[in-house]
Length: 342
Image (cartoon, rainbow, N blue to C red; front, top):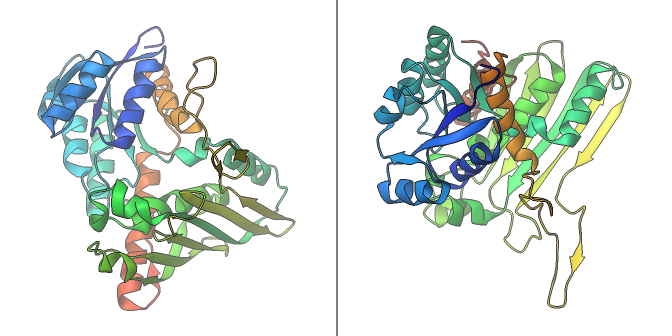
């Protein structure tokens, strides 16, 4: 398929689904052919904006012989049905993180992908961010030695749960955020998780009618003896200059690494206010250069070039396994073993 253009479909047209649409419509190796959302008006409006077809039925996408690959960007809890449909239709697939919020659902998706013999990828987009790629290379070159311990945090301002996600009560800071850091550290350590001991706090969001955890901490032990504490919350005050707060400490047998990524590298004092502008989607020359588009383009390349994707469906399963053990540990107050392989 090296000389072909990948004909793409996107299912789920919320914020991140729109990013998928933008990436495939812009990339020279792909064409956005169909968009799909249960809100037919949203699907129609998106199709008009990108000049493609639309449908409100997942079955239409799965049965469409003109579609090569599908991006699934439905809410965290709603990946199983569209994933199985398009995999049974023989389509290559990229699924937004987390792969699933239930281990049996994650297993079903992995097994369906294997049965279909297609390219399957979980969109853990932080692997493509330059600083994290640099950290991975440093570890591979032995600059830290063997992993010993770590602390990884990723949190959002409260507006994400209260205003951005109408389905926040059906997810949480662990499913929405911690999946990123768990994937990164598992990738860095190159070892599988074996046990989780976790705790959580609930109250602030519940008082606002959003019945989910405010904050989650999980201590994960990995094969080889290393461990890492993962910390995510959804209640940073909106007065914070950044929507996202994140960073990483890693200790190895030969070195120590510290990275803080709070979006404060750029400070701008304008005539009316001071702030920390986020990275724009396009540079002044029109190119989409925000790193979160890279895994989408990479997936297209994998489809066309016959390459097995990094951040596979199996990687998605491993993170879901860690998070399911996290939830079980919170509920029981005890350490819980992890089943990282389907």
